[in-house]
Length: 135
Image (cartoon, rainbow, N blue to C red; front, side, top):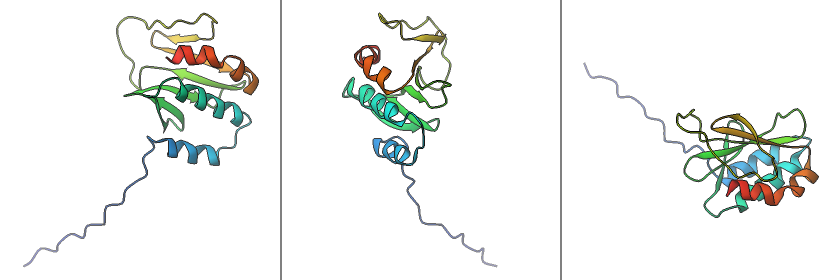
């Protein structure tokens, strides 16, 4: 008796979430009271260094060089936030040190910090400090 051959479905290529185009699509459908501030954050963080790329990670615009290091926090109680991290996994070792002369960072652990902005005006007011932190 001959075995039935399995039918293979054609390979469908899923659109990668690791692209700026994916973030553009995400932002186009996003309904958020601080959407202009989120767009400003994208511009500031992406513009901090040419090696920074965007993607959608954890259902939010996120930023990476090799590994993701920053994710927008869209559920902040006031405004919008950015969480700086060392990827998805908690890492051991020494605490991270980031120059923060404007005292914008709130440390959530030795490897994670958060910045919170009340709205677009505050993002724009602290844009150069944020750019320096990201660099």
